[in-house]
Amino acid sequence: MLAFPLAPKAPIYYQQVTTLQHPMQHLTIATRESRLALWQAEHVQALLQAQGHPVTLLGMTTKGDQILDRSLSKVGGKGLFVKELETALEEGRADLAVHSLKDVPMELPEGFTLACVMEREDPRDAWVSNKYARLQDLPQGAVVGTSSLRRVALLRALRPDLTIEALRGNLDTRLRKLDEGLYDGIVLAAAGLKRLGLESRIAQVFEPEQMLPAAGQGALGIETMQGREALAQSLGALLHLPTLLAVSAERMVSRLMGGSCSMPLAAYARFTDQGLHLRAAWGDPEGQHPLVQVQASAPVHTLAEAERLGSQVALALKAGVDAQTH
Image (cartoon, rainbow, N blue to C red; front, side):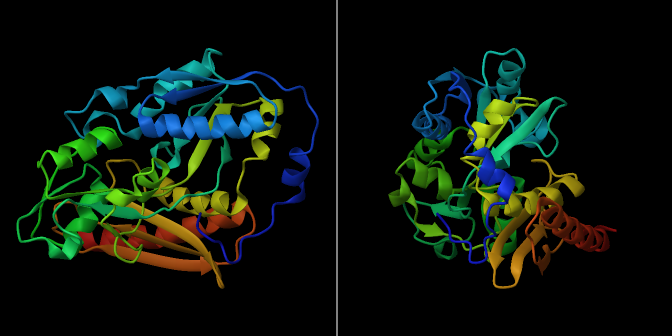
Protein backbone atom coordinates (compact mmCIF):
# COMPACT_ATOMS: atom_id res chain seq x y z
CA MET A 1 0.00 0.00 0.00
CA LEU A 2 1.16 3.55 -0.68
CA ALA A 3 2.11 5.83 2.19
CA PHE A 4 0.24 9.05 3.01
CA PRO A 5 2.74 11.39 4.75
CA LEU A 6 0.14 13.75 6.21
CA ALA A 7 -2.78 11.36 6.34
CA PRO A 8 -5.34 12.80 8.80
CA LYS A 9 -6.57 10.65 11.62
CA ALA A 10 -10.05 9.20 11.39
CA PRO A 11 -12.63 11.53 12.94
CA ILE A 12 -14.16 10.43 16.21
CA TYR A 13 -17.44 9.32 14.68
CA TYR A 14 -15.65 6.80 12.45
CA GLN A 15 -13.76 5.43 15.44
CA GLN A 16 -16.97 5.07 17.41
CA VAL A 17 -18.76 3.30 14.56
CA THR A 18 -16.27 0.45 14.54
CA THR A 19 -16.84 -0.30 18.22
CA LEU A 20 -20.65 -0.37 18.26
CA GLN A 21 -22.18 -3.71 19.13
CA HIS A 22 -24.82 -5.17 16.81
CA PRO A 23 -25.95 -8.66 15.84
CA MET A 24 -23.72 -10.30 13.25
CA GLN A 25 -25.98 -10.38 10.22
CA HIS A 26 -25.54 -12.66 7.24
CA LEU A 27 -24.28 -10.63 4.29
CA THR A 28 -24.30 -11.28 0.55
CA ILE A 29 -21.81 -9.55 -1.76
CA ALA A 30 -22.79 -8.99 -5.40
CA THR A 31 -19.77 -9.26 -7.67
CA ARG A 32 -18.78 -9.59 -11.29
CA GLU A 33 -17.32 -13.00 -12.09
CA SER A 34 -13.98 -11.97 -13.57
CA ARG A 35 -10.96 -13.22 -11.64
CA LEU A 36 -10.06 -9.72 -10.47
CA ALA A 37 -13.62 -8.88 -9.39
CA LEU A 38 -13.82 -12.14 -7.45
CA TRP A 39 -10.49 -11.39 -5.75
CA GLN A 40 -11.85 -8.01 -4.66
CA ALA A 41 -15.11 -9.50 -3.37
CA GLU A 42 -13.29 -12.30 -1.56
CA HIS A 43 -10.97 -9.73 0.04
CA VAL A 44 -13.96 -7.85 1.48
CA GLN A 45 -15.62 -11.16 2.40
CA ALA A 46 -12.59 -12.16 4.48
CA LEU A 47 -12.51 -8.82 6.30
CA LEU A 48 -16.22 -9.00 7.15
CA GLN A 49 -15.93 -12.64 8.22
CA ALA A 50 -13.15 -11.57 10.59
CA GLN A 51 -15.79 -9.36 12.26
CA GLY A 52 -17.99 -12.43 12.71
CA HIS A 53 -20.36 -11.98 9.76
CA PRO A 54 -21.33 -15.02 7.69
CA VAL A 55 -20.71 -13.79 4.12
CA THR A 56 -21.57 -15.35 0.75
CA LEU A 57 -20.88 -14.17 -2.80
CA LEU A 58 -23.43 -13.68 -5.57
CA GLY A 59 -21.56 -13.89 -8.88
CA MET A 60 -23.05 -11.99 -11.83
CA THR A 61 -22.20 -11.14 -15.44
CA THR A 62 -22.77 -7.51 -16.37
CA LYS A 63 -23.44 -5.93 -19.74
CA GLY A 64 -19.98 -4.41 -19.57
CA ASP A 65 -18.55 -7.94 -19.47
CA GLN A 66 -20.74 -9.11 -22.36
CA ILE A 67 -20.16 -6.28 -24.87
CA LEU A 68 -16.57 -6.66 -26.02
CA ASP A 69 -16.69 -5.55 -29.65
CA ARG A 70 -17.23 -1.85 -28.97
CA SER A 71 -15.60 0.75 -26.73
CA LEU A 72 -17.37 1.58 -23.47
CA SER A 73 -17.72 5.20 -24.55
CA LYS A 74 -19.99 4.04 -27.40
CA VAL A 75 -22.23 1.62 -25.50
CA GLY A 76 -23.14 3.36 -22.27
CA GLY A 77 -20.01 3.88 -20.20
CA LYS A 78 -18.56 2.25 -17.13
CA GLY A 79 -21.96 2.13 -15.46
CA LEU A 80 -22.49 -1.03 -17.51
CA PHE A 81 -20.22 -2.79 -15.02
CA VAL A 82 -22.38 -1.94 -12.00
CA LYS A 83 -26.03 -1.87 -13.15
CA GLU A 84 -26.80 -5.57 -12.63
CA LEU A 85 -25.11 -5.46 -9.22
CA GLU A 86 -27.27 -2.48 -8.24
CA THR A 87 -30.39 -4.39 -9.32
CA ALA A 88 -29.39 -7.22 -6.97
CA LEU A 89 -29.04 -4.69 -4.14
CA GLU A 90 -32.38 -3.08 -4.92
CA GLU A 91 -34.18 -6.45 -5.04
CA GLY A 92 -32.63 -7.56 -1.74
CA ARG A 93 -30.67 -10.43 -3.29
CA ALA A 94 -27.42 -8.80 -2.11
CA ASP A 95 -26.44 -6.45 0.70
CA LEU A 96 -23.36 -4.85 -0.81
CA ALA A 97 -21.42 -4.67 -4.06
CA VAL A 98 -17.65 -4.32 -4.37
CA HIS A 99 -16.37 -2.20 -7.25
CA SER A 100 -13.10 -0.93 -8.64
CA LEU A 101 -13.78 2.70 -7.80
CA LYS A 102 -12.70 3.94 -11.23
CA ASP A 103 -15.64 1.95 -12.67
CA VAL A 104 -18.21 3.63 -10.40
CA PRO A 105 -20.19 6.46 -12.08
CA MET A 106 -19.79 9.89 -10.52
CA GLU A 107 -23.51 10.05 -9.71
CA LEU A 108 -25.20 7.00 -8.16
CA PRO A 109 -28.90 6.29 -8.71
CA GLU A 110 -31.33 7.52 -6.07
CA GLY A 111 -31.42 5.24 -3.04
CA PHE A 112 -27.83 4.00 -3.42
CA THR A 113 -24.72 5.13 -1.57
CA LEU A 114 -20.98 4.61 -1.72
CA ALA A 115 -20.80 3.36 1.86
CA CYS A 116 -17.07 2.70 2.11
CA VAL A 117 -13.80 3.44 0.30
CA MET A 118 -10.96 1.10 1.23
CA GLU A 119 -7.21 1.69 1.34
CA ARG A 120 -5.78 2.25 -2.10
CA GLU A 121 -3.44 -0.15 -3.86
CA ASP A 122 -0.89 1.15 -6.37
CA PRO A 123 -2.83 3.76 -8.42
CA ARG A 124 -0.39 3.83 -11.35
CA ASP A 125 -0.64 2.48 -14.88
CA ALA A 126 1.63 -0.37 -15.95
CA TRP A 127 3.32 -1.12 -19.26
CA VAL A 128 3.07 -4.82 -20.14
CA SER A 129 5.01 -6.19 -23.09
CA ASN A 130 6.78 -9.40 -24.05
CA LYS A 131 9.12 -7.53 -26.40
CA TYR A 132 9.89 -4.07 -25.07
CA ALA A 133 10.92 -3.17 -21.53
CA ARG A 134 9.85 0.46 -21.83
CA LEU A 135 7.38 2.46 -23.87
CA GLN A 136 10.22 4.55 -25.25
CA ASP A 137 11.85 1.39 -26.68
CA LEU A 138 8.99 0.82 -29.15
CA PRO A 139 9.76 1.40 -32.82
CA GLN A 140 7.71 3.92 -34.77
CA GLY A 141 4.26 2.58 -35.64
CA ALA A 142 4.30 -0.18 -33.00
CA VAL A 143 0.85 -1.34 -31.88
CA VAL A 144 -0.29 -0.58 -28.32
CA GLY A 145 -3.58 -1.85 -26.91
CA THR A 146 -5.98 0.07 -24.67
CA SER A 147 -9.64 1.06 -24.76
CA SER A 148 -9.34 3.88 -22.23
CA LEU A 149 -9.65 7.30 -23.86
CA ARG A 150 -7.56 8.69 -21.01
CA ARG A 151 -4.73 6.29 -21.80
CA VAL A 152 -5.09 6.91 -25.53
CA ALA A 153 -4.72 10.67 -25.00
CA LEU A 154 -1.76 10.32 -22.64
CA LEU A 155 -0.03 7.78 -24.88
CA ARG A 156 -0.43 10.11 -27.85
CA ALA A 157 1.13 12.91 -25.81
CA LEU A 158 4.10 10.65 -24.97
CA ARG A 159 4.45 8.87 -28.33
CA PRO A 160 2.37 10.37 -31.16
CA ASP A 161 4.03 7.98 -33.63
CA LEU A 162 2.45 4.81 -32.16
CA THR A 163 -0.55 2.90 -33.48
CA ILE A 164 -3.12 2.58 -30.69
CA GLU A 165 -5.78 -0.08 -31.09
CA ALA A 166 -8.81 -1.05 -29.01
CA LEU A 167 -8.40 -3.68 -26.30
CA ARG A 168 -11.44 -4.90 -24.34
CA GLY A 169 -12.09 -7.81 -22.00
CA ASN A 170 -11.13 -8.69 -18.45
CA LEU A 171 -7.51 -8.65 -17.33
CA ASP A 172 -6.81 -12.28 -18.27
CA THR A 173 -8.35 -11.77 -21.72
CA ARG A 174 -6.19 -8.71 -22.34
CA LEU A 175 -3.02 -10.55 -21.34
CA ARG A 176 -3.96 -13.48 -23.58
CA LYS A 177 -4.42 -11.17 -26.56
CA LEU A 178 -0.99 -9.68 -25.87
CA ASP A 179 0.55 -13.16 -25.66
CA GLU A 180 -1.08 -14.09 -28.97
CA GLY A 181 0.95 -11.33 -30.59
CA LEU A 182 -1.92 -8.95 -31.39
CA TYR A 183 -0.10 -6.05 -29.71
CA ASP A 184 3.48 -4.99 -29.09
CA GLY A 185 2.43 -3.90 -25.62
CA ILE A 186 -0.62 -2.98 -23.56
CA VAL A 187 -1.35 -0.60 -20.69
CA LEU A 188 -3.15 -1.93 -17.60
CA ALA A 189 -3.76 -0.79 -14.03
CA ALA A 190 -0.87 -1.87 -11.81
CA ALA A 191 -3.29 -2.58 -8.94
CA GLY A 192 -5.13 -5.37 -10.75
CA LEU A 193 -1.90 -7.11 -11.74
CA LYS A 194 -0.57 -6.92 -8.19
CA ARG A 195 -3.80 -8.16 -6.64
CA LEU A 196 -3.76 -11.26 -8.85
CA GLY A 197 -0.09 -12.01 -8.22
CA LEU A 198 0.87 -10.98 -11.76
CA GLU A 199 3.35 -8.26 -10.85
CA SER A 200 6.03 -10.11 -12.82
CA ARG A 201 4.14 -9.21 -16.01
CA ILE A 202 4.84 -5.52 -15.42
CA ALA A 203 7.71 -4.32 -17.58
CA GLN A 204 7.48 -0.67 -16.55
CA VAL A 205 5.34 1.30 -14.10
CA PHE A 206 4.40 4.78 -15.30
CA GLU A 207 4.91 7.43 -12.66
CA PRO A 208 1.99 9.86 -12.40
CA GLU A 209 4.18 12.55 -13.96
CA GLN A 210 4.33 10.39 -17.11
CA MET A 211 0.79 9.00 -17.19
CA LEU A 212 -1.70 10.46 -14.74
CA PRO A 213 -4.09 7.83 -13.31
CA ALA A 214 -7.87 7.84 -13.60
CA ALA A 215 -9.99 9.17 -10.73
CA GLY A 216 -10.27 6.44 -8.10
CA GLN A 217 -7.79 4.09 -9.77
CA GLY A 218 -6.44 1.44 -7.39
CA ALA A 219 -9.17 1.96 -4.76
CA LEU A 220 -12.08 -0.31 -3.92
CA GLY A 221 -15.53 1.13 -3.25
CA ILE A 222 -18.41 -0.64 -1.51
CA GLU A 223 -21.92 0.28 -2.63
CA THR A 224 -25.08 -0.36 -0.60
CA MET A 225 -28.66 0.83 -0.42
CA GLN A 226 -29.17 3.90 1.75
CA GLY A 227 -30.53 3.40 5.25
CA ARG A 228 -28.59 0.22 6.08
CA GLU A 229 -27.26 1.54 9.38
CA ALA A 230 -26.01 -1.74 10.89
CA LEU A 231 -24.22 -2.57 7.64
CA ALA A 232 -22.69 0.91 7.54
CA GLN A 233 -21.30 0.31 11.03
CA SER A 234 -19.64 -2.92 9.93
CA LEU A 235 -18.16 -1.25 6.85
CA GLY A 236 -16.82 1.61 8.98
CA ALA A 237 -13.98 -0.68 10.07
CA LEU A 238 -12.88 -1.05 6.42
CA LEU A 239 -12.90 2.65 5.57
CA HIS A 240 -9.54 4.35 4.90
CA LEU A 241 -9.94 8.08 5.41
CA PRO A 242 -6.86 9.31 3.47
CA THR A 243 -7.97 7.31 0.42
CA LEU A 244 -11.54 8.56 0.80
CA LEU A 245 -10.39 12.19 0.84
CA ALA A 246 -8.01 11.74 -2.10
CA VAL A 247 -10.53 9.99 -4.35
CA SER A 248 -13.29 12.42 -3.36
CA ALA A 249 -11.16 15.27 -4.71
CA GLU A 250 -10.44 13.28 -7.88
CA ARG A 251 -14.07 12.33 -8.43
CA MET A 252 -15.18 15.93 -7.97
CA VAL A 253 -12.93 16.92 -10.88
CA SER A 254 -14.49 14.20 -13.01
CA ARG A 255 -18.03 15.07 -11.91
CA LEU A 256 -17.67 18.76 -12.76
CA MET A 257 -15.99 17.97 -16.09
CA GLY A 258 -18.90 15.69 -17.01
CA GLY A 259 -16.54 12.78 -16.54
CA SER A 260 -17.28 9.36 -17.97
CA CYS A 261 -15.36 6.89 -20.09
CA SER A 262 -16.17 9.16 -23.04
CA MET A 263 -14.09 11.92 -21.40
CA PRO A 264 -10.28 11.66 -21.82
CA LEU A 265 -9.72 12.82 -18.25
CA ALA A 266 -7.16 11.97 -15.57
CA ALA A 267 -7.16 13.03 -11.90
CA TYR A 268 -4.90 11.90 -9.08
CA ALA A 269 -4.43 13.19 -5.53
CA ARG A 270 -1.93 12.27 -2.83
CA PHE A 271 -0.93 13.67 0.54
CA THR A 272 2.35 15.61 0.71
CA ASP A 273 3.94 18.01 3.18
CA GLN A 274 1.73 20.74 1.69
CA GLY A 275 -1.50 18.83 2.28
CA LEU A 276 -3.48 17.11 -0.47
CA HIS A 277 -1.87 17.63 -3.88
CA LEU A 278 -4.29 17.17 -6.79
CA ARG A 279 -3.31 16.96 -10.44
CA ALA A 280 -5.70 16.67 -13.37
CA ALA A 281 -5.22 16.40 -17.10
CA TRP A 282 -7.38 16.47 -20.22
CA GLY A 283 -6.06 15.10 -23.48
CA ASP A 284 -7.29 14.86 -27.04
CA PRO A 285 -7.46 11.18 -28.17
CA GLU A 286 -7.09 12.37 -31.77
CA GLY A 287 -3.92 14.26 -30.93
CA GLN A 288 -5.20 17.53 -32.40
CA HIS A 289 -4.82 19.55 -29.19
CA PRO A 290 -2.00 19.68 -26.62
CA LEU A 291 -2.43 18.05 -23.21
CA VAL A 292 -4.01 20.40 -20.65
CA GLN A 293 -2.74 19.94 -17.08
CA VAL A 294 -3.65 21.66 -13.81
CA GLN A 295 -2.50 21.11 -10.23
CA ALA A 296 -3.14 22.57 -6.79
CA SER A 297 -2.53 21.76 -3.11
CA ALA A 298 -4.51 22.55 0.03
CA PRO A 299 -4.79 21.37 3.65
CA VAL A 300 -7.55 18.74 3.57
CA HIS A 301 -9.10 17.01 6.59
CA THR A 302 -12.76 16.75 5.62
CA LEU A 303 -14.83 15.68 2.63
CA ALA A 304 -15.95 19.27 2.10
CA GLU A 305 -12.32 20.44 1.90
CA ALA A 306 -11.45 17.61 -0.51
CA GLU A 307 -14.36 18.45 -2.79
CA ARG A 308 -13.51 22.14 -2.64
CA LEU A 309 -10.01 21.36 -3.90
CA GLY A 310 -11.50 19.19 -6.64
CA SER A 311 -13.83 22.00 -7.69
CA GLN A 312 -10.95 24.48 -7.84
CA VAL A 313 -8.90 22.20 -10.09
CA ALA A 314 -11.89 21.33 -12.28
CA LEU A 315 -12.66 25.00 -12.95
CA ALA A 316 -9.04 25.69 -13.90
CA LEU A 317 -8.92 22.59 -16.11
CA LYS A 318 -12.17 23.50 -17.85
CA ALA A 319 -10.84 26.98 -18.58
CA GLY A 320 -7.69 25.46 -20.08
CA VAL A 321 -9.67 22.99 -22.21
CA ASP A 322 -11.99 25.74 -23.45
CA ALA A 323 -8.99 27.85 -24.42
CA GLN A 324 -7.52 24.94 -26.41
CA THR A 325 -10.67 23.85 -28.20
CA HIS A 326 -12.41 27.15 -29.03
